[in-house]
Image (cartoon, rainbow, N blue to C red; front, side, top):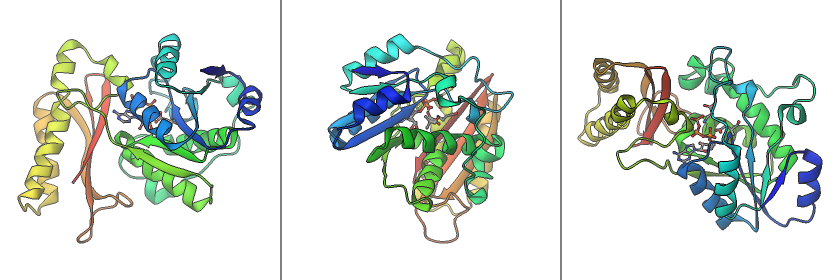
Length: 274
Ligand SMILES: Nc1ncnc2c1ncn2[C@@H]1O[C@H](COP(=O)(O)OP(=O)(O)OP(=O)(O)O)[C@@H](O)[C@H]1O
Ligand SMILES: CC(C)(CO)[C@@H](O)C(=O)[O-]
Ligand code: BAL
């Protein structure tokens, strides 16, 4: 695997690539990331991953400074997964001057759920991903469903800006007890880690109730949040939405139930398609 810290080096290496599959990450890699690399390998002859902790998508009180950085380990995992090129720029390379040109996603897509809690987050994600797309110029890019709203926002960006890139969604990879793998799981204490699968269990409970014909979405959302709160969580939302644009369902659409909640100092998200 070749490691590139500059745009010039990556561009030179990719000059003759035929078809490129790209997986952007913020590092501290786990099996969820590695599954995306595996799918990327099936998509194209050249696989590019990136590691960049993007300041633009973190709020002032969020965990940018303490976000886990495990570069050596990540490189070993990417090489073992058959990644051809790793792009790992520092902040000066990505943002040599303050980033003044920003992507402003559709407010209807970002003023809800994660975006309502993390103001400016999806603008920061869209801006860095568009810039990474311009640097890598992939044919296909892969993102995990764990970050369901991110996937929706980026799919819409690609469509509205007519980027010639196919977006492929990877299923959420979970621990045996159901907890969605996430770099932020590493912040959990032993007791919190034992409690953490309850988030997924509440989503599964909602899915079961819906399958059994329950129609009162608000009751399910409220009861699931109350159950979390009773076990020491601070839920931001549990919401049953239509998959296409994450708005409240109007009729017979395909649904997804999404959740975000804090356990101690750690904020976890998860979702289940219904
Ligand atoms: N459990 C998972 N299964 C599948 N894909 C995942 C999983 N976790 C993360 N991804 C995907 O990996 C890509 C990079 O994500 P990122 O580096 O932010 O990892 P993360 O574990 O989600 O970290 P964080 O704790 O910041 O949410 C994104 O497309 C994300 O959706
Ligand atoms: C897509 C991404 C790499 C942009 O920084 C990040 O939001 C992530 O890791 O999901
Ligand atoms: N996995 C999404 C990146 C973030 O939480 O900032």
